[in-house]
Image 1 (tube, rainbow, N blue to C red):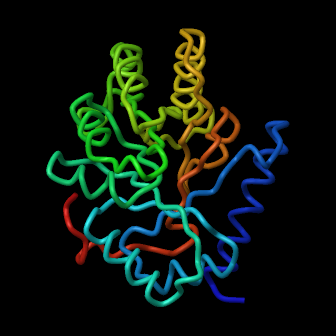
Image 2 (spheres, rainbow, N blue to C red; image 1 turned 90 degrees about the vertical axis):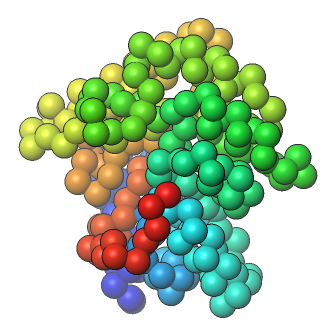
Length: 238
C-alpha cells in the first residue's frame, strides 16, 4: 500500500471515529482531498485508492493538473472543487472546469460564474464562504450580510447554491475550536428557515477535523494529512 493510500485510510478512520463520537452516520461526511501544489501522480495515486473528489486553490495549476490526469488515466472519473479565492479574471476558467466552488463571497463573482457557465454543463454547485471568525486577513462574507447574498445567489441561473464554507481561526482548545463551526451550522439553519434548501457545510481541515464533524460538517477538506507537507513555490496566485 502506498503512503497516500495509507494516509487516506487513516483519515477515513479518523472521520469514522469522529462521526461515531458525534452519533452521526459516517456516510453524511464527504472527504475532499485537497491536492493543491501536488502533481497529477499524487491525484492518480489517491484516485486508485478510491478517492474521487479533489480540491484546488490555484486556477492554472488545477487546469494543467486536470489535463495531465486525463492524459495519463482517461478512465478516471473525478470531481473537481475550487476552494481558493477567486479573482474576477479567472471566473471563466473556474466556471468551465470545476463541478463545485466553495469560495464565493461576493455577488459579482457569483454573477460572472453564472454568466460563464456553459448551459450544456450541469449547474455549478456553490458554497458561500463566510468569514466566521471576523479575521481581516480572511476572505468571506460577514455573517450579517449572508442572508442577502444567499438570496441573490440562489436566484442566478446555472448555479445551485448548496451551503456554506468557512476557515475559522485556529484554536488549541477543542471547545473553542467547535464554536465557529457551531456558528456556521446555525447560519445554515437560519438560511433554511428562510426557505432555502441547503445541505452542505464545508468545514474542517487536517488540524480541526474532529471539531468540525462534531458540529455537523458534511464535507471536510483534508490535504496535509493525505499528501504531506506542501511546497508552494510552483503555484500561481489565483
